[in-house]
Image (cartoon, rainbow, N blue to C red; front, side, top):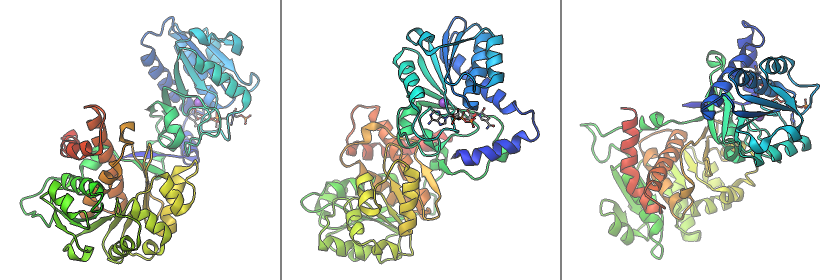
Length: 478
Ligand SMILES: NC(=O)C1=CN([C@@H]2O[C@H](COP(=O)(O)OP(=O)(O)OC[C@H]3O[C@@H](n4cnc5c(N)ncnc54)[C@H](OP(=O)(O)O)[C@@H]3O)[C@@H](O)[C@H]2O)[C@@H](O)CC1
Ligand SMILES: [K+]
């Protein structure tokens, strides 16, 4: 698991660690890591042209100290100071001792730079990047140099990923102590590039993280192979309510995804029964009501089920049970009209909205996607899986996951139906709702990445690739 930490969590941890150390120890560690990674990115340091963008806080100090190390190895380092009187004195002295130069913006030589290091603002930033900084960023990023952000790309809110104005669009972000949420979620994710974490020794003093990202190993732990004592019932039976006689596709995809994730038993109830059974003879189907389907351990309800009164009564029948339920797509539209169906439940419910569905349920998502998912989960006492470039899962206690897998190719019809089926299969095994939802998002993203290796993908490709995805995840942990 990778912990994500806000500035308010990091600062006291840094102070606690510093209590037993020389005051500049952490900055020196940060700068050493920064210079080492920049050197690796440059390949050849001697003669490389490096430009530093330097704000007046410690973020600028990091850039200056790393620049000094690169200059000492023969790089031609120029520093542009946004506020000459405020620049970090120790960093400036070190840079000049190593042969680096302070220049005006117009003399920076951005057009010939090999690497631009953004030390304008880090976790101390607030609000949109001010005009002088924004203008410098625009000029620096128009050149050919590799764009590397120190700790956080300037203009990105470290805690949330909000980007309220201009920002440094980094190809790499070298971050210190812990990954910040803003590097992996929301608009900030798209500006951070590849994130490199430099250990500055905070490990023993960090509190519980603000949010976490699952790794392949975390998810593989939930995908164990059947044991000798397992039968088709003990693996968790999923019930699927999706699709219709006219549009059976959602039922076919959702049922297939559930079968391909945990091939135990999948029951289908609804008017797409004939289409589902034609595609998946392994599923047990009924064209009747959910109550006619037989016993299940979890329900998935919603994809393509419609939003009329019949659909509402079917959804209500499932939501009054004391079983875990995933509500997706049309089911979410119905819940937005009847939130009490979810609020009154005591068994776990997972809602899986995209932004427009979320807005109908809880109001606009806004720029802080972590806060939005938590707000929705608290409001209805459920787990919210907010789909996006980086899907966010929050439960009613505020525990939050940010998904780390996926590909833009997943933005195609039917992939949500597949995710719902995967999630239902994991929920039916008895996993807590938040773990099931976060693991499903991870697995779905990995299936998308695998399918995309073979060219443009459609939702059915995800279903086909699920067994291999599961095998790879399990294989990755030996
Ligand atoms: N703490 C530690 O132990 C360690 C910390 N480390 C490093 O320190 C960094 C945090 O340093 P920090 O606290 O000095 O804040 P920082 O990010 O440099 O920002 C302050 C500057 O930004 C400016 N500014 C603000 N908003 C702005 C805007 N919208 N647009 C433009 N400017 C804006 C603000 O200007 P002012 O408001 O003062 O005029 C001030 O100049 C952290 O990210 C990491 O890199 C590492 O070395 C590891 C050890
Ligand atoms: K920065």
